[in-house]
Length: 194
Image 1 (cartoon, rainbow, N blue to C red):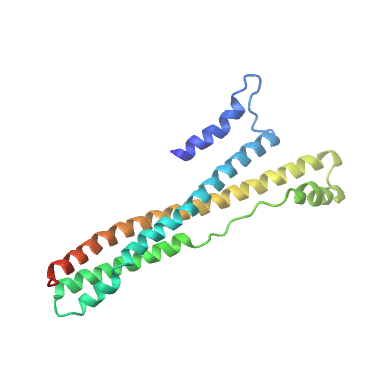
Image 2: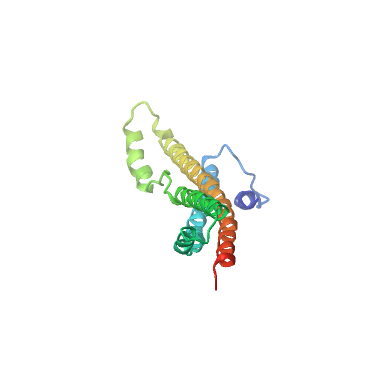
């Protein structure tokens, strides 16, 4: 819902002026909207990256007591049920770590090219092409820039979707691991003599 609000906010500033009607056929307006959309996607990506440390901290809390649990599982106080619960914890912890790694993996995305690529290099290439009318060169460069921005937006959106999916899976795995973790600790505390 927040993303839709951001899109509406980006479009709102072009629709607010009463003397201006938004024209989707105008390349400059499309470049502005696409650039706003790209900024939204880049902010979301940065937000996902900022979530990594606290998720790592949660996983760290889940692994803090692991040596004691392993020691308890090999002691004479543990039964088959205790071992089963601890194996279940190990499975959930492994799933949590796997999801965390998938969440943290860098995703390939298209980087925004320097403006010089468009106003210098591409402009010169289009001017040198004799099949292109000289009055249309600027429009060709604008469309190329718009296409490049659209590719960047798509790349960031795909990256954000993948990060969101793995973040959700990581949090679910952390929750499941936490439940089994608390049960393991409770079993150990109950069965360990004082």
